[in-house]
Image (cartoon, rainbow, N blue to C red; front, side):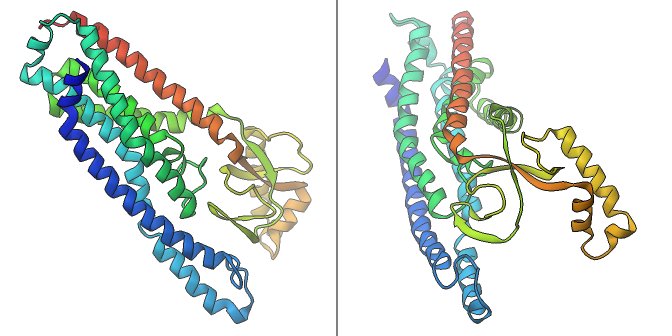
Length: 339
């Protein structure tokens, strides 16, 4: 049964391997090139654009090299987010919906093994395929993100392509498409519906669940002057730490020791706005005047990079838990289906 499941997916796996190999080669070439131009820009005399007037033109040209080198980074990130769900969905629709559509299940279900065993073999083989194909790609994407200074790993743009999230997305998409295929029994509709539902769930987890999995910290923003380079670009020595996930900013009463609540930030923002709309607020240095008069300080909310693996493992549990539930529901559905 396991061998049969593998043979059914063999041609698709060859295509997936070729695609992954192509993506990996491009990522390595891009990463090495961008790592070099960033190294030049962060070294003397530019030091991340902290230069005297004598080197301004030279460092501006190096900065332009950085921008030119990273012009395709967003496309690479989109591919990284999409490749896992797409591969999982393709395997899922080929494993179940296609067999139901062409009727080969009638022969398979008349053999000595049960329907549950038939479905289990599909999951075992295809999860193994996804592990073998996407595991190395996850490592390459994680390296690429650091090498290109694309984004902090814990940030919303870096998180989906860091760690092993592409693989976890693929397992979830596979389970979802298998379940949808058991109801639709049509490859086209199963694939389209499964990908759409996967996108909805990923968006919901990213915007509705991830922000509540960890509490943010806060830092007093005492300066906006760029001082150091990081894997996410640059950060201020008087702001939130490098490589962190910025969760917002605002004003809080001076000397605040605990994380300011949303209500407190809103109240401080209202006071600051009223002051800025006054005649004195419109005057020169009005912002500094209002901050001093109201005894406020600028703060930034953030989740530090040290919480990265905690968030990753939490989301692994969420998606794999969803996948397990979908597999159980699929097994129930399969045992109730007519041949």
